[in-house]
Length: 189
Image 1: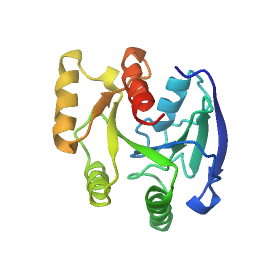
Image 2: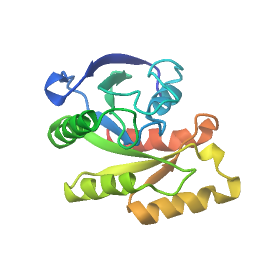
Image 3: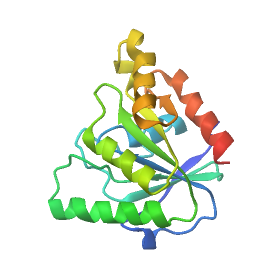
Image 4: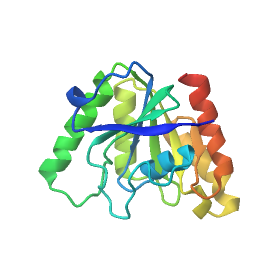
């Protein structure tokens, strides 16, 4: 259970990220997939992480302290965002550097919007993670917007495609959220 959460800092790249000597969890996903909403929901703080309806709001690595036990790193989204190609390339370079070289990084969580078919950039991220030997799990966001009869089928489909553990997530139906928190407790702490 999360009792305390606070924003620590934002950084453009790995060299600007302080070392907190705590295990770190990085949140990956397309722009506007729900990474910031995930942070707000699990911490029960509606304004801890900034959210927006516009893709590309998260432009920096945002670090949050959770219970003084672990750090969540909210990373810039990949995919559609109204920024220049040069800016997107810079984000990608900084993202790769962080994921490959952050020594405190213990878990990667890839967020995929459950309302849609898996997108090409989600698949590319999966391939990149496999290629670089990085362990990850998948969180299927906005699961409450799927037909109830299709939720398990959607989770099974994502498991088959990604070959990863898949957790449903909803900002509305919070009963799903204990599964990912339990996984973090058992595998990171």
